Length: 425
Ligand code: ATP
Ligand code: MG
Image (tube, rainbow, N blue to C red; front, side, top):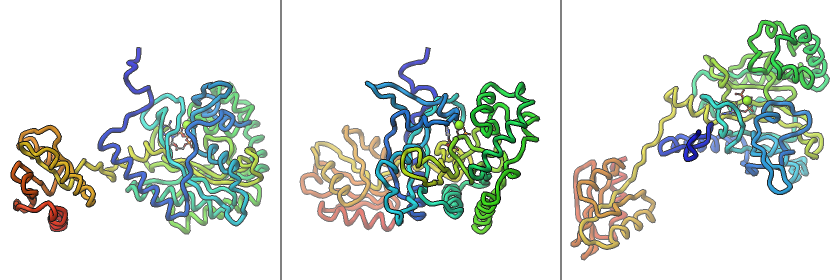
């Protein structure tokens, strides 16, 4: 039986230096979003189940992987993805009200929950950063979304990321394609998995996204969406590709890319490492969607966005050595010797107020032990106070790099520390 005092399967504790990696990545993401004019939106971690379980959504995520629970009369679900909560909020707060403010460009970052089989790059609680540009349809917005995701991967130092892109066309094109797929797969139904039988009935596009069947022989000759796009869908897609060319973003057209969620239309994309093998490859993925805003009651407005898996991005950056953890450090370490009461703490607080990071000893440990800690924290300045210093309100200040030490009055401590740190830069 699982030890109840360990994290649940598929979840992780992030500790110490690993957290510093996450903070770095989060900072890069926030800075990039500000440059691209995306503002943060924070929606609840759980919603009414109906927000995610929208009609016609036959994705595995919705049908099999959601953490749903009852509380009183409500059925609630931990969010498995970001888009639907954001659209719910967009409509609830009537963000569509002023056409001059469209598109609304929003981003979110936080944990998502899916009951999947845990493996490398696949967790039950994982973290996504994602964007949504809602309320305007333009190939330029699709290109900008891809560019933002790609830029973030570059800022993290990731090498060899390519974008797979496809068009699912408009409603008419998709209907024609669905019919063609049904026709094509009919004789192969016996070879397909149980889920694909359901997909065949509900949404045959989905069959192409099957992780079990996708390498089967019959998939290779399946009809391609590109033969079913009508003229306006073709034109739209051509403009997206031109935008990617003009911005120098490396991409490949993958005409079997349909993406996991049911509400996509026109442009869909997925970013993967060039040499990716295995199924946990996509680092970010998304596309344009129609109908979702309308579903929540906000009128006929399209959107485009993507979700980025932060665990996958960070794992890749660490593997590629492009992201290093920060070790804990402190500018100043305050050593107290003998009976100095709270004098050491007073100095510590005064220097923290002045803007320095300062650590001290709390347990009256030996001089040697305290020096060892200051070394571990890589402190550039060590302040030593004993009973004499406490009595005449001074301190010994040691410049670690220069190996010099002087007696300094309390009132001049901050200035002295500042000078030493500046000299060390
Ligand atoms: P996959 O094909 O890997 O199952 P998906 O199509 O289910 O991905 P999306 O719903 O589009 O993924 O989510 C966007 C991104 O979130 C993915 O590209 C991936 O980086 C990340 N992601 C999705 N599910 C998980 C998970 N269980 N654990 C970690 N990251 C995930
Ligand atoms: Mg999935």
